[in-house]
Structures are given as C-alpha cells and as structure tokens.
Length: 155
Image (cartoon, rainbow, N blue to C red; front, top):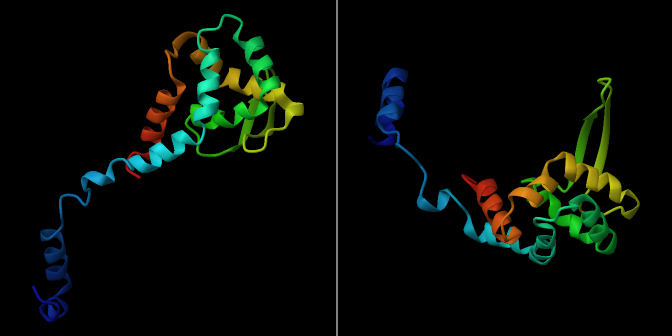
C-alpha cells in the first residue's frame, strides 16, 4: 500500500493494514546477548575475581575473607558483579528482630576501609559467603561471565 492510499483510508482500514503487516519479531540473533559487553564487563574485575577464588571452599570463610579484604580492600569492587548488580553504590534496607527498619549505603566503587565489617556483613547476609564456601566450584571469572550474560540478555 502506498502512503496516499493509506492516508485516505478509514481509521479501521489503517488499523487493519497495520495489524496485517506486523512482523512476528524484530529480534535478530544479535538481540539476545551482546558478547562484547559481557566480555568487557567481566574483564573489568578479572584480577579481583581470580584473587577471590582463594575463598572458594574455605571453612572459616568469614574471618579469612575479612583478613583478605583488610589486606586488599579493592577486591570488594568485584562484589556487585558477583551478586548480579549493575549498581556500584547499594542502598540497603535492614530489618531487626523488632521489625525496626534502617537504611544504609555501601559504596563498592570507592571502598571505605573503615567499614570493612559492614561490607562483609552485607556479603554474608546476601548469601555470597555461603555460595563461595559451599557451592562455587573453580572460577569466579567464569561465574561472572555467566552472570553478565544473564544481565545482558535481551539488552
């Protein structure tokens, strides 16, 4: 149908033309995952992730992680990737046993070394320490590659 025919047709005819010519999809194969972005985002923290592999399977993981972060606090910058967060400054709601709510913020972009216990408590409460201790296998780089693929799906 040419444009003049389309414009001169009734609203019902235009709607029918529109519905009749809709495509099933606009998704090309490239739509599903931007592999360059996955690679780029994973490589940002490759050194930190390889160092954090040290924690995999450790028995006293809380104290070992605390010592590791005391010696290398910038390792904490990789945590958002491990918990599938694009945000690097996280706002966190805490509810105590009496149902009192409080809010705090943890900045994983600029690590505040005076709050290492806060970072570690968050990591523990988020389930990351348990994952590292009991469920992670070998490579946090490979794990984050998968996380990044999931975050980028249908980008």
